[in-house]
Length: 66
Image 1 (cartoon, rainbow, N blue to C red):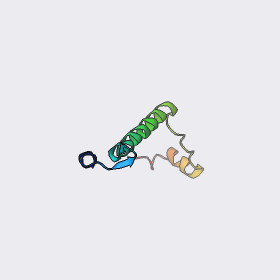
Image 2: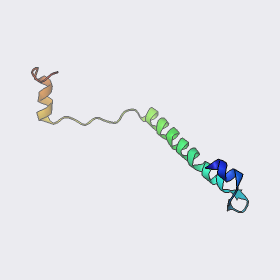
Image 3: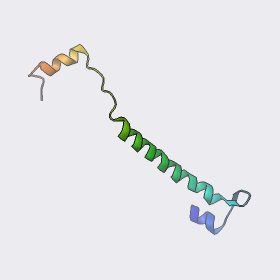
């Protein structure tokens, strides 16, 4: 798509080619992925919910263990 725009340019604003505007999307997604990666590396795993008393008893039952 960008190659087509570069071969036969249309303009977004003034002299800014339309393909320059299209390049913003992959860079934006890349920045989002980088942010999520850094966030997950610095904050660690999410808290795990506590088991209800009924399910906690299953851990002590040897017949239920697989």
